[in-house]
Image (cartoon, rainbow, N blue to C red; front, side, top):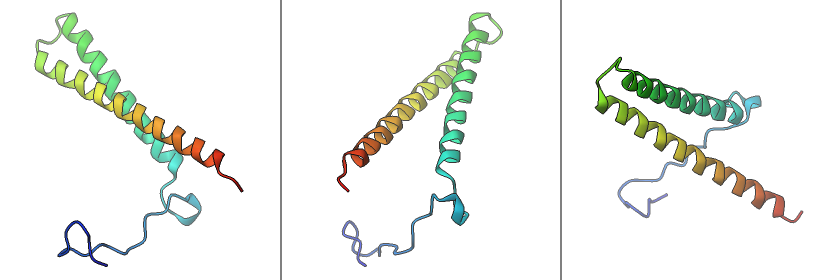
Length: 97
């Protein structure tokens, strides 16, 4: 099949990875749990760095600001993913059988 964006590069016709744990693929629940754990650890790291800066344990303001911004971006992304999941669930619930 020809790629409509770049006609020189063919589109891969391989199968998409399965999210069904019965088939040995990644489990959707585990993927979400791991992502949320990573966001949580990033936020906790940013909070710890902010506390260390406030108490004078570190003077690396650039590192503190980068960690805080990284945590903020990850939280925004998590919120958008949650919104998309809820929207998809609502679309499925509205489907007629």
